[in-house]
Length: 368
Length: 196
Image (cartoon, rainbow over all chains, first blue to last red; front, side, top):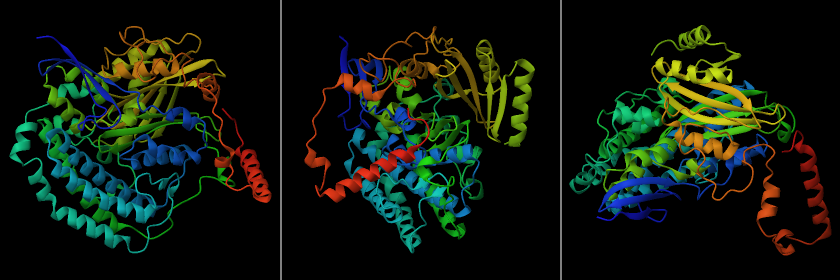
């Protein structure tokens, strides 16, 4: 049969964000494929060099649209490391609550996103409705729904509002009670299982070849390789949680890991709310006017665990008021570019969207 | 997991035994950086890969126009001995060439392509390094070099737009206008430091 050229995305319901997969298909078998990034390139790395350290706080959350808090955390930790200052104790716990709420929100969105390629839109509506409740909590804490600009170098912007614990508890209780329902709707649903089981495999040797991290790696290698566990930041060493793993990485087991992480995040939030001490939440980075704060010379790489894997900022300072260079290591860079090129050929056309969804390819962090 | 400070000591021993390290910097218990000569980098990466640092997390560059150098950075990770390693080396800025590492870390393929696009570093041996990745039909110098001026580029590339004054000045009362000007001036004067 003749080969045909096809574009998957950016308007396809299974495509996440403004990237496109260029496919050459024979019948419905993919023969050649590659990602076309660049539709969302906004010059962030250059922009960060042109702003002061404190100005950058409003720029960095925009690097990843759906999960902005990891950007703030990586930038804040890197700046603190360069400066040699330590955030106050309470700020660490508040940061963990924010990060885990953000993880819940992105997992719900990704799980709902499974509804796109598999055609189960009920799942998507339910997941997005629950995500909306998280955004309401964020709005109460930070004043913003999506880009919070809340985790800043030196701590967090302000303390939690009075009585927010009640709302958070109410939400995570309701989410936990609906957990089984979510499983039945998605990965236990026979019509979807037939679609996601044994498709889009990721063998363990491929993981190291690509450099995939996060759920993709853990579901394949079967070991708890999570930045929160092996090199704990904030106060992750003082809470108890498990890292769900599997040693057979098809689309279903990756989503299964994602759902199990929801339960772990809920447990982490509960522990944080119980253990959180009272006290100040922010220390200034320097003396005097914030536009003139300088950061000592140095090179630092600050990694955090995002929902898609190891996400890091490579930060270089030359001692000036602006960063000299900030490089963003997008968590989905390997599976988005090299993964699409090397491991999609041989699979079926309708599985391409499943790869994009279950590996969590996020185009804004590929483009930066 | 083993004691994390032991990992750093192990790593320092391994590197000092095999290579002439220009500079070592222990950033914290989970991160070390080594500055190497350009000729040593490939061998060092092979050594570290065999020692268990099988994941390449990041590859990029930093521009230092004052020294006329470009610094290439490799960040490696080993999940069994959790230490991030930065390998850095400075190369000539006028003709920056680094041998490719895709036979050691296949995942570097697209990072090298991006590095070529944004810094102009050539990676002979990588079959695709000169293809365009993110910037479409780029016809200027690599944009993350420090002497690239985005303002000049956009002035040259795009037609100038006239903005209606009504949108810029919300109120035309003179005292408010003067106040706004003064505030703007003060913000400019406080910026300090180098302006790129």
